[in-house]
Each structure stands twice: as structure tokens, then as C-alpha cells.
Length: 40
Image (cartoon, rainbow, N blue to C red; front, top):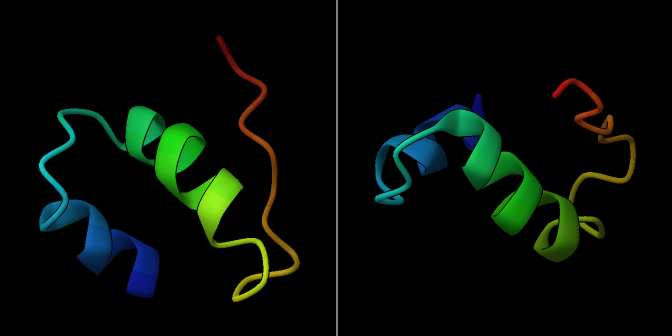
């Protein structure tokens, strides 16, 4: 839920862009069990 709330205030147009560019690289320590976004 935290990631979804942060997405709405982030300014990214798509959730995929937010997740792959912001969450995966920067939030690994806060969320150690994040899943990858493999779909094209």
C-alpha cells in the first residue's frame, strides 16, 4: 500500500515506470522481498 500511495504523489505516468525506475533501485533496503517487473 505504501508503494501505491507513493506512486500517486510521484508524478510518474505509469506504475511500471515508477516501480522499475524508483522503487526497485532505491527502496531495496526498505522492502527486501520486492518482485521484479519482467513483463514487457
